[in-house]
Length: 399
Image 1 (cartoon, one colour):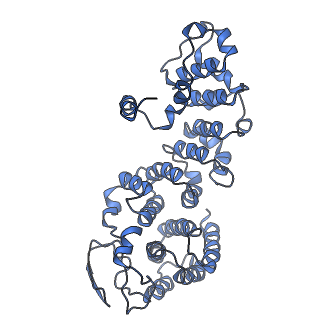
Image 2 (cartoon, one colour):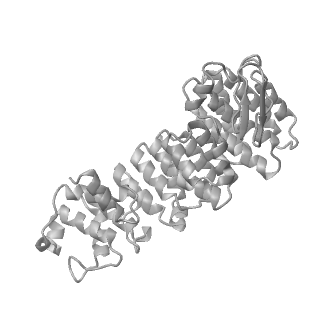
Image 3 (cartoon, helix red, strand yellow):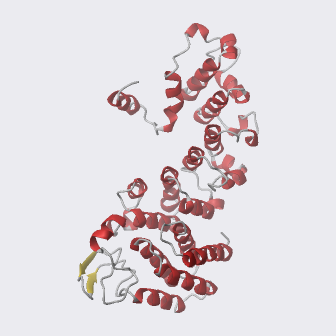
Protein backbone atom coordinates (compact mmCIF):
# COMPACT_ATOMS: atom_id res chain seq x y z
CA UNK A 1 0.00 0.00 0.00
CA UNK A 2 1.42 3.33 -1.00
CA UNK A 3 2.02 5.82 1.77
CA UNK A 4 -0.07 8.97 2.05
CA UNK A 5 2.44 11.18 0.20
CA UNK A 6 2.68 8.73 -2.68
CA UNK A 7 -1.12 8.46 -2.88
CA UNK A 8 -1.42 12.24 -2.95
CA UNK A 9 1.13 12.43 -5.75
CA UNK A 10 -0.73 9.81 -7.76
CA UNK A 11 -4.18 11.33 -7.35
CA UNK A 12 -2.86 14.82 -8.09
CA UNK A 13 -2.06 13.63 -11.62
CA UNK A 14 -5.73 12.87 -12.23
CA UNK A 15 -7.49 16.10 -13.21
CA UNK A 16 -10.96 14.65 -12.66
CA UNK A 17 -10.25 12.78 -9.43
CA UNK A 18 -13.22 13.03 -7.05
CA UNK A 19 -12.42 10.32 -4.56
CA UNK A 20 -14.84 7.49 -5.29
CA UNK A 21 -13.68 6.85 -8.87
CA UNK A 22 -10.53 5.01 -7.70
CA UNK A 23 -12.23 2.67 -5.27
CA UNK A 24 -12.64 -0.05 -7.87
CA UNK A 25 -8.99 0.17 -8.87
CA UNK A 26 -7.91 -0.03 -5.24
CA UNK A 27 -9.70 -3.37 -4.84
CA UNK A 28 -7.92 -4.79 -7.83
CA UNK A 29 -4.48 -3.55 -6.85
CA UNK A 30 -4.91 -5.39 -3.56
CA UNK A 31 -5.35 -8.67 -5.46
CA UNK A 32 -2.77 -8.35 -8.20
CA UNK A 33 -2.90 -7.72 -11.94
CA UNK A 34 -3.68 -10.60 -14.29
CA UNK A 35 -0.82 -11.53 -16.60
CA UNK A 36 -1.06 -10.02 -20.06
CA UNK A 37 -1.01 -13.50 -21.58
CA UNK A 38 -4.23 -14.22 -19.70
CA UNK A 39 -6.04 -11.27 -21.29
CA UNK A 40 -7.75 -13.25 -24.03
CA UNK A 41 -11.36 -14.20 -24.58
CA UNK A 42 -11.05 -17.59 -22.91
CA UNK A 43 -9.35 -16.09 -19.85
CA UNK A 44 -11.87 -13.26 -19.77
CA UNK A 45 -14.76 -15.72 -19.75
CA UNK A 46 -13.11 -17.91 -17.11
CA UNK A 47 -11.74 -15.37 -14.62
CA UNK A 48 -13.83 -12.74 -12.82
CA UNK A 49 -10.61 -10.80 -12.14
CA UNK A 50 -9.97 -10.49 -15.88
CA UNK A 51 -13.50 -9.21 -16.44
CA UNK A 52 -13.06 -6.63 -13.72
CA UNK A 53 -9.76 -5.48 -15.18
CA UNK A 54 -11.33 -5.03 -18.59
CA UNK A 55 -14.09 -2.95 -17.02
CA UNK A 56 -11.44 -0.84 -15.33
CA UNK A 57 -9.45 -0.34 -18.51
CA UNK A 58 -12.59 0.48 -20.45
CA UNK A 59 -13.80 3.00 -17.89
CA UNK A 60 -10.60 5.01 -18.10
CA UNK A 61 -10.25 4.71 -21.90
CA UNK A 62 -11.05 7.69 -24.13
CA UNK A 63 -11.77 5.48 -27.13
CA UNK A 64 -13.06 1.92 -27.59
CA UNK A 65 -10.11 -0.47 -28.20
CA UNK A 66 -10.24 -4.24 -28.68
CA UNK A 67 -7.97 -5.42 -25.88
CA UNK A 68 -9.30 -8.96 -25.42
CA UNK A 69 -10.28 -10.00 -28.93
CA UNK A 70 -10.17 -8.12 -32.22
CA UNK A 71 -13.71 -9.25 -32.97
CA UNK A 72 -15.19 -7.45 -29.98
CA UNK A 73 -14.81 -3.89 -28.73
CA UNK A 74 -14.00 -3.60 -25.03
CA UNK A 75 -17.15 -1.64 -24.30
CA UNK A 76 -19.34 -4.36 -25.83
CA UNK A 77 -17.73 -7.02 -23.65
CA UNK A 78 -18.06 -4.82 -20.59
CA UNK A 79 -21.75 -4.25 -21.30
CA UNK A 80 -22.32 -7.99 -21.40
CA UNK A 81 -20.76 -8.26 -17.95
CA UNK A 82 -23.82 -6.59 -16.41
CA UNK A 83 -25.41 -10.05 -16.45
CA UNK A 84 -22.47 -11.66 -14.59
CA UNK A 85 -23.03 -13.97 -11.62
CA UNK A 86 -20.32 -12.08 -9.70
CA UNK A 87 -21.87 -8.98 -8.09
CA UNK A 88 -18.56 -7.11 -8.18
CA UNK A 89 -18.29 -7.67 -11.92
CA UNK A 90 -21.78 -6.18 -12.32
CA UNK A 91 -20.68 -3.20 -10.24
CA UNK A 92 -17.57 -2.69 -12.38
CA UNK A 93 -19.60 -3.04 -15.57
CA UNK A 94 -22.05 -0.30 -14.60
CA UNK A 95 -19.21 1.90 -13.36
CA UNK A 96 -17.44 1.55 -16.73
CA UNK A 97 -20.66 2.34 -18.63
CA UNK A 98 -21.04 5.46 -16.54
CA UNK A 99 -17.38 6.43 -16.81
CA UNK A 100 -16.74 5.84 -20.54
CA UNK A 101 -17.52 8.85 -22.80
CA UNK A 102 -19.63 6.62 -25.08
CA UNK A 103 -21.36 4.88 -22.20
CA UNK A 104 -25.08 5.43 -21.73
CA UNK A 105 -28.08 4.02 -19.94
CA UNK A 106 -29.52 3.24 -23.38
CA UNK A 107 -27.01 0.39 -23.73
CA UNK A 108 -27.69 -1.17 -20.32
CA UNK A 109 -28.66 -4.78 -20.97
CA UNK A 110 -30.73 -5.18 -17.82
CA UNK A 111 -33.68 -3.23 -16.46
CA UNK A 112 -32.94 -0.94 -13.49
CA UNK A 113 -35.35 -2.88 -11.27
CA UNK A 114 -33.18 -5.97 -11.78
CA UNK A 115 -30.14 -4.20 -10.35
CA UNK A 116 -31.41 -2.97 -6.99
CA UNK A 117 -30.36 -5.81 -4.69
CA UNK A 118 -26.86 -4.60 -3.77
CA UNK A 119 -25.85 -1.13 -2.47
CA UNK A 120 -22.62 -0.77 -4.48
CA UNK A 121 -24.43 -1.73 -7.68
CA UNK A 122 -27.18 0.76 -6.90
CA UNK A 123 -24.63 3.50 -6.28
CA UNK A 124 -23.28 3.26 -9.82
CA UNK A 125 -26.70 2.57 -11.31
CA UNK A 126 -27.87 5.93 -9.92
CA UNK A 127 -24.79 7.60 -11.38
CA UNK A 128 -25.58 6.08 -14.78
CA UNK A 129 -29.24 7.14 -14.55
CA UNK A 130 -28.13 10.71 -13.87
CA UNK A 131 -25.42 10.87 -16.50
CA UNK A 132 -27.60 13.21 -18.57
CA UNK A 133 -30.86 15.09 -18.08
CA UNK A 134 -32.91 13.00 -20.52
CA UNK A 135 -31.99 9.73 -18.83
CA UNK A 136 -32.76 11.17 -15.41
CA UNK A 137 -36.16 12.42 -16.57
CA UNK A 138 -37.03 9.02 -18.03
CA UNK A 139 -36.28 7.41 -14.64
CA UNK A 140 -37.57 10.22 -12.46
CA UNK A 141 -39.95 8.15 -10.34
CA UNK A 142 -37.23 5.70 -9.31
CA UNK A 143 -34.75 8.47 -8.54
CA UNK A 144 -37.32 10.43 -6.53
CA UNK A 145 -38.28 7.36 -4.53
CA UNK A 146 -34.62 6.74 -3.70
CA UNK A 147 -34.15 10.27 -2.34
CA UNK A 148 -36.00 9.10 0.78
CA UNK A 149 -33.60 7.43 3.27
CA UNK A 150 -36.27 4.96 4.36
CA UNK A 151 -36.56 3.80 0.73
CA UNK A 152 -32.82 3.82 0.02
CA UNK A 153 -31.22 2.68 3.25
CA UNK A 154 -27.64 2.58 1.93
CA UNK A 155 -25.61 5.70 2.63
CA UNK A 156 -23.18 5.02 -0.24
CA UNK A 157 -26.05 4.48 -2.67
CA UNK A 158 -27.72 7.76 -1.67
CA UNK A 159 -24.36 9.47 -1.99
CA UNK A 160 -24.08 8.11 -5.53
CA UNK A 161 -27.48 9.56 -6.38
CA UNK A 162 -26.57 12.91 -4.82
CA UNK A 163 -23.31 13.07 -6.78
CA UNK A 164 -25.19 12.25 -9.96
CA UNK A 165 -27.51 15.24 -9.47
CA UNK A 166 -24.63 17.73 -9.25
CA UNK A 167 -24.85 18.93 -12.87
CA UNK A 168 -28.58 18.41 -13.46
CA UNK A 169 -31.39 20.96 -13.19
CA UNK A 170 -34.36 18.59 -12.65
CA UNK A 171 -36.88 21.38 -12.11
CA UNK A 172 -39.60 18.74 -11.78
CA UNK A 173 -38.15 17.51 -8.48
CA UNK A 174 -36.65 20.64 -6.95
CA UNK A 175 -38.96 20.63 -3.91
CA UNK A 176 -38.34 16.94 -3.26
CA UNK A 177 -34.60 17.60 -3.43
CA UNK A 178 -34.92 20.40 -0.86
CA UNK A 179 -36.84 18.03 1.40
CA UNK A 180 -34.16 15.37 0.92
CA UNK A 181 -31.40 17.78 1.88
CA UNK A 182 -33.29 18.94 4.96
CA UNK A 183 -34.10 15.43 6.18
CA UNK A 184 -30.94 13.57 5.11
CA UNK A 185 -29.21 12.08 8.19
CA UNK A 186 -25.82 11.50 6.55
CA UNK A 187 -23.32 14.40 6.40
CA UNK A 188 -21.53 12.81 3.44
CA UNK A 189 -24.77 12.69 1.43
CA UNK A 190 -25.66 16.29 2.35
CA UNK A 191 -22.13 17.26 1.34
CA UNK A 192 -22.69 15.69 -2.07
CA UNK A 193 -26.06 17.46 -2.46
CA UNK A 194 -24.54 20.91 -1.93
CA UNK A 195 -23.27 21.01 -5.52
CA UNK A 196 -26.77 20.41 -6.90
CA UNK A 197 -28.35 23.09 -4.71
CA UNK A 198 -25.55 25.51 -5.58
CA UNK A 199 -26.20 24.88 -9.28
CA UNK A 200 -29.88 25.73 -8.79
CA UNK A 201 -29.08 28.81 -6.73
CA UNK A 202 -26.31 30.24 -8.93
CA UNK A 203 -26.96 29.15 -12.51
CA UNK A 204 -30.77 29.05 -12.36
CA UNK A 205 -31.28 31.87 -9.83
CA UNK A 206 -33.36 29.66 -7.54
CA UNK A 207 -33.91 31.73 -4.40
CA UNK A 208 -35.28 28.77 -2.45
CA UNK A 209 -32.16 26.70 -3.09
CA UNK A 210 -30.08 29.69 -1.99
CA UNK A 211 -32.11 30.09 1.20
CA UNK A 212 -31.85 26.39 2.02
CA UNK A 213 -28.06 26.58 1.75
CA UNK A 214 -27.92 29.78 3.80
CA UNK A 215 -30.10 28.19 6.51
CA UNK A 216 -27.81 25.15 6.61
CA UNK A 217 -24.74 27.36 6.85
CA UNK A 218 -26.35 29.41 9.63
CA UNK A 219 -27.13 26.21 11.50
CA UNK A 220 -23.67 24.62 11.39
CA UNK A 221 -21.22 27.32 10.31
CA UNK A 222 -17.89 27.01 8.46
CA UNK A 223 -16.36 24.56 10.93
CA UNK A 224 -18.52 21.71 9.66
CA UNK A 225 -17.71 19.99 6.37
CA UNK A 226 -21.11 20.88 4.93
CA UNK A 227 -20.79 24.48 6.08
CA UNK A 228 -17.31 24.79 4.59
CA UNK A 229 -18.56 23.33 1.31
CA UNK A 230 -21.46 25.80 1.21
CA UNK A 231 -19.06 28.66 1.87
CA UNK A 232 -16.86 27.50 -1.01
CA UNK A 233 -19.74 27.55 -3.53
CA UNK A 234 -21.60 30.60 -2.22
CA UNK A 235 -21.82 33.85 -4.17
CA UNK A 236 -20.68 37.02 -2.37
CA UNK A 237 -24.17 38.53 -2.47
CA UNK A 238 -25.48 35.68 -0.29
CA UNK A 239 -23.85 37.45 2.64
CA UNK A 240 -22.44 34.39 4.41
CA UNK A 241 -19.50 36.45 5.60
CA UNK A 242 -21.96 38.55 7.63
CA UNK A 243 -23.38 35.64 9.57
CA UNK A 244 -21.57 36.10 12.85
CA UNK A 245 -23.03 33.41 15.08
CA UNK A 246 -22.79 29.65 14.66
CA UNK A 247 -23.57 26.82 17.02
CA UNK A 248 -20.08 26.99 18.50
CA UNK A 249 -19.54 30.69 19.04
CA UNK A 250 -23.13 31.20 20.12
CA UNK A 251 -22.27 29.52 23.40
CA UNK A 252 -19.38 31.97 23.83
CA UNK A 253 -21.75 34.93 23.56
CA UNK A 254 -24.68 33.47 25.46
CA UNK A 255 -23.98 30.83 28.06
CA UNK A 256 -27.55 30.33 29.18
CA UNK A 257 -30.36 32.79 28.36
CA UNK A 258 -32.89 31.68 25.78
CA UNK A 259 -33.57 33.48 22.52
CA UNK A 260 -37.19 33.80 23.61
CA UNK A 261 -36.57 34.86 27.21
CA UNK A 262 -37.76 38.12 28.67
CA UNK A 263 -36.41 41.44 27.49
CA UNK A 264 -34.63 42.02 30.79
CA UNK A 265 -32.05 39.45 29.82
CA UNK A 266 -29.50 39.34 27.05
CA UNK A 267 -30.49 38.26 23.56
CA UNK A 268 -28.92 37.41 20.23
CA UNK A 269 -29.12 38.99 16.78
CA UNK A 270 -27.82 37.14 13.72
CA UNK A 271 -26.76 38.30 10.28
CA UNK A 272 -25.64 41.79 11.14
CA UNK A 273 -22.67 43.60 9.64
CA UNK A 274 -21.87 45.49 12.81
CA UNK A 275 -23.24 45.36 16.33
CA UNK A 276 -22.46 46.56 19.80
CA UNK A 277 -23.77 44.16 22.41
CA UNK A 278 -24.75 45.33 25.87
CA UNK A 279 -24.93 42.32 28.17
CA UNK A 280 -27.78 43.95 30.06
CA UNK A 281 -30.98 45.17 28.48
CA UNK A 282 -30.27 47.00 25.22
CA UNK A 283 -28.42 46.75 21.97
CA UNK A 284 -27.38 49.24 19.31
CA UNK A 285 -26.64 48.12 15.78
CA UNK A 286 -26.08 49.22 12.22
CA UNK A 287 -25.81 47.61 8.81
CA UNK A 288 -28.14 45.60 6.61
CA UNK A 289 -29.85 42.25 6.90
CA UNK A 290 -31.01 42.79 10.48
CA UNK A 291 -33.96 40.45 10.22
CA UNK A 292 -34.46 40.62 14.00
CA UNK A 293 -33.41 44.23 14.52
CA UNK A 294 -34.99 45.96 17.51
CA UNK A 295 -36.67 42.80 18.77
CA UNK A 296 -35.81 41.91 22.33
CA UNK A 297 -35.84 38.50 24.02
CA UNK A 298 -39.43 37.63 24.98
CA UNK A 299 -40.90 39.94 22.34
CA UNK A 300 -39.51 37.92 19.43
CA UNK A 301 -42.40 35.46 19.27
CA UNK A 302 -45.07 38.14 19.45
CA UNK A 303 -43.24 40.36 16.97
CA UNK A 304 -42.94 37.51 14.47
CA UNK A 305 -46.60 36.56 14.85
CA UNK A 306 -47.61 40.20 14.51
CA UNK A 307 -45.65 40.44 11.25
CA UNK A 308 -47.58 37.42 9.95
CA UNK A 309 -50.93 39.04 10.76
CA UNK A 310 -49.84 42.29 9.07
CA UNK A 311 -48.46 40.70 5.89
CA UNK A 312 -49.34 42.72 2.81
CA UNK A 313 -49.90 39.71 0.55
CA UNK A 314 -52.94 37.81 1.80
CA UNK A 315 -52.15 34.70 -0.24
CA UNK A 316 -51.52 31.65 1.94
CA UNK A 317 -52.78 33.44 5.06
CA UNK A 318 -54.57 30.22 5.95
CA UNK A 319 -51.13 28.96 7.01
CA UNK A 320 -50.76 31.69 9.65
CA UNK A 321 -52.39 29.75 12.55
CA UNK A 322 -50.16 26.73 11.89
CA UNK A 323 -47.04 28.90 11.74
CA UNK A 324 -48.10 30.64 14.97
CA UNK A 325 -48.66 27.32 16.74
CA UNK A 326 -45.28 26.04 15.61
CA UNK A 327 -43.26 29.09 16.64
CA UNK A 328 -44.90 29.20 20.09
CA UNK A 329 -44.07 25.54 20.64
CA UNK A 330 -40.55 26.14 19.32
CA UNK A 331 -40.07 28.83 21.98
CA UNK A 332 -40.38 26.24 24.74
CA UNK A 333 -38.15 23.70 23.04
CA UNK A 334 -34.61 23.17 24.28
CA UNK A 335 -32.89 23.35 20.92
CA UNK A 336 -29.90 25.54 20.13
CA UNK A 337 -30.60 29.24 19.82
CA UNK A 338 -29.26 29.50 16.27
CA UNK A 339 -31.77 26.80 15.25
CA UNK A 340 -34.60 28.93 16.61
CA UNK A 341 -33.16 31.99 14.91
CA UNK A 342 -33.15 30.24 11.53
CA UNK A 343 -36.84 29.41 11.88
CA UNK A 344 -37.74 32.93 12.99
CA UNK A 345 -35.89 34.47 10.06
CA UNK A 346 -37.63 32.11 7.62
CA UNK A 347 -41.03 33.02 9.07
CA UNK A 348 -40.29 36.75 8.89
CA UNK A 349 -39.22 36.32 5.27
CA UNK A 350 -42.59 34.71 4.53
CA UNK A 351 -44.40 37.63 6.16
CA UNK A 352 -42.49 40.18 4.06
CA UNK A 353 -42.68 38.38 0.72
CA UNK A 354 -45.27 39.02 -1.98
CA UNK A 355 -46.27 37.37 -5.24
CA UNK A 356 -44.26 34.41 -6.49
CA UNK A 357 -41.50 35.16 -3.97
CA UNK A 358 -43.93 34.29 -1.18
CA UNK A 359 -44.25 30.76 -2.50
CA UNK A 360 -40.45 30.47 -2.62
CA UNK A 361 -40.15 31.70 0.97
CA UNK A 362 -42.75 29.18 2.10
CA UNK A 363 -40.74 26.40 0.47
CA UNK A 364 -37.69 27.65 2.34
CA UNK A 365 -39.63 27.66 5.61
CA UNK A 366 -40.82 24.12 4.88
CA UNK A 367 -37.22 22.96 4.37
CA UNK A 368 -36.04 24.68 7.58
CA UNK A 369 -38.87 23.25 9.68
CA UNK A 370 -38.45 19.76 8.24
CA UNK A 371 -34.77 19.87 9.12
CA UNK A 372 -35.60 20.78 12.74
CA UNK A 373 -38.09 17.99 13.45
CA UNK A 374 -35.46 15.44 14.48
CA UNK A 375 -33.26 17.84 16.45
CA UNK A 376 -32.48 16.93 20.08
CA UNK A 377 -34.54 19.05 22.45
CA UNK A 378 -37.53 19.64 20.18
CA UNK A 379 -40.70 19.65 22.29
CA UNK A 380 -43.34 17.08 21.31
CA UNK A 381 -45.87 19.80 20.45
CA UNK A 382 -43.25 21.54 18.31
CA UNK A 383 -42.63 18.33 16.37
CA UNK A 384 -46.37 17.77 15.94
CA UNK A 385 -46.93 21.38 14.89
CA UNK A 386 -43.95 21.27 12.55
CA UNK A 387 -45.21 18.12 10.82
CA UNK A 388 -48.63 19.70 10.30
CA UNK A 389 -47.04 22.88 8.97
CA UNK A 390 -44.80 21.01 6.52
CA UNK A 391 -47.79 19.02 5.23
CA UNK A 392 -49.90 22.17 4.86
CA UNK A 393 -47.17 24.05 2.97
CA UNK A 394 -46.66 21.09 0.66
CA UNK A 395 -50.38 21.10 -0.12
CA UNK A 396 -50.54 24.89 -0.52
CA UNK A 397 -47.58 25.36 -2.85
CA UNK A 398 -47.94 22.12 -4.75
CA UNK A 399 -44.69 20.58 -3.42
